[in-house]
Image 1 (cartoon, rainbow, N blue to C red):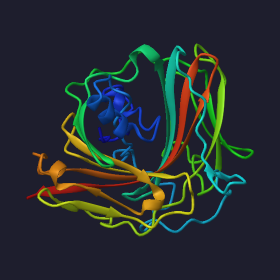
Image 2 (image 1 turned 45 degrees about the vertical axis):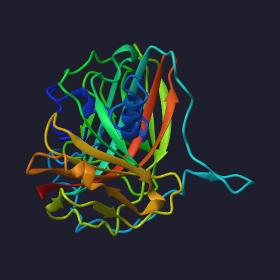
Image 3 (image 1 turned 135 degrees about the vertical axis):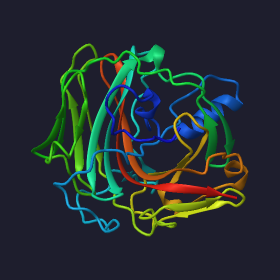
Image 4 (image 1 turned 45 degrees about the horizontal axis):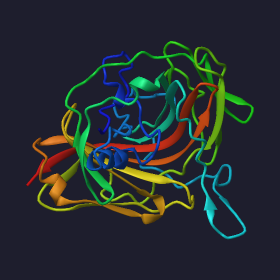
Length: 322
């Protein structure tokens, strides 16, 4: 479920730890599919990039500053006053599915920026075997075994741009980049990040997503280890952004392939509660906590459905105690 980190791009990690947030409600979808008797709907994952190599070329945060500007909100308001959030067409029946994920990890410092893409045959996506229990906005579940990486497909080189500036190019065959090695891979809140694939086995595609605002007011603060009492509800709160389409994901992990808990709510909620009934099932004494602010959309290639997400991440270690 919750990522143990996307820093070891060596093919040794489970591929559901990469395929995060194709649909932001993936945590709930996985649980709902179990309760309705269906197959697993999506990756119940997050993107805790804590193990990414530190970026010494980008100054570290002291704990996430306020939104410093950038482009306006991607959500639009119609005549009725309702907000229309970017979604995308339904690619049901296409041969391939995949994700392009751009992440800014604000905590732990120093700040670093990551990009990855993964595309695979729809028949192998997502991995099977997830079982979960849904309580409100949160899911507790586990994947019983690591099926390893699937057969990955190429959509040619994938270029990430901000206006006329190229931030990074994900080369076919690896599809990863980090500000550690690509110091131009950086952006401000509100930046309109465009992802363009030149095309290969998977057809060419393009999509644009606005970078979400930085976190402020997170409680408990993620700049130090968090003590989680498994006999009590854990309430996580934050200062909501002004983006009507942002989602917040919060997750707790106990370690690789161990049961974990994850929640997805609207950014405007400002709070989420992981219930004691879930935490009481934890057996480990330590793990990782992740909070993310997510903006995303879906786009179609000629033969594939591609999710594109931009996320702000904070992650810290956890200590579990009764």
